[in-house]
Amino acid sequence: MLFSVYVPVLVTAALAALAPPIARRLPPRPAAWALVCVALVTAVGWSGSLALLAFTGVAQIPQIAREGHWSVAVLRAEDPVSLAVAAGSALALATGIVSLGVAAVRQVRHLVRARQECADLPGRAELAVVDDEVPLAFALPGAPGRIVVSRGMLRCLDDDGRAALLAHERAHLAGRHHLFQGLWRLAAALNPLLRPLATAGGFLLERWADEEAAARVGDRRVVAHAVGRAALASAAASRPPALAATGGAVPQRVKALLAPPPTRRRLPFAAGGLLLVLCCASLANAASDNDRLLDHAQWARCVEYTDTAASWPADHDVRPRSCCTDRERHEHGARES
Image (cartoon, rainbow, N blue to C red):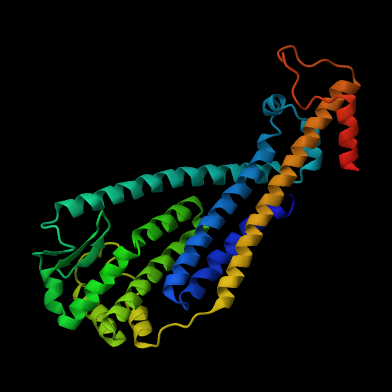
């Protein structure tokens, strides 16, 4: 467990640093799905590694060892993790879990508020035009979702620009991009190293919607012009809502739309997949090593009682399963050899 338990942490740090800039150069739809997989797998690997490291310190507490029927001396002798590392891991894990809970509550409130806003909008059509001179256009997730556009935004665009704008927002709703955002935010709340993934993911969602709009309209320059005009019109407005047409890094989006569509590349996805497999395999190996360590510690405690002809404590009415018989001792020795 000495090395394998740290591999998920190293993989998480590597992907958090390398995945965002690479993903920006890839087709946005598969890149967004890849970032979701990276966020979920590394968040689990990160938490699992911290849990294993923290357990090595908790398991050496005499009261815990007594309940688990294992030898503290064996754990201290065979476990190379220091108590300082175990305590730091426990603190980081506890902080991440609390942060995850707070973020989950916020996400639920956000979805409930969005659904309520959908219900409060006039009419039942997909498009809701609000009488507001402030240029705004965004998608509200719901059942079904709604597209909200202000009259001020409609006045800023011509017919082709309006068609591109609506196609962009429909792509957000059809792709359920709010779920992608929620997963990235939850993963970043659990592990702060994943915050760059959440930022890059937001840009990829806008690029995904841009590419869908370009395919629907049939002209990339029209979509680029609409994105630029909408961003300039709303520059003086308040901060745009999530999944807004003016969200993300607008200059980079316009530049990407004026260029040919990004080509598919297999190497980055294959390399990322290998790193995720390495993360999972290392975590499984560390968990297996930890299980064998506990088994050895329980066995040492059992042998200690058996060899010294000592009885189990009076408050234990039932002998634990780790208590060995002569046959079990022989089988354990065979496994060790």
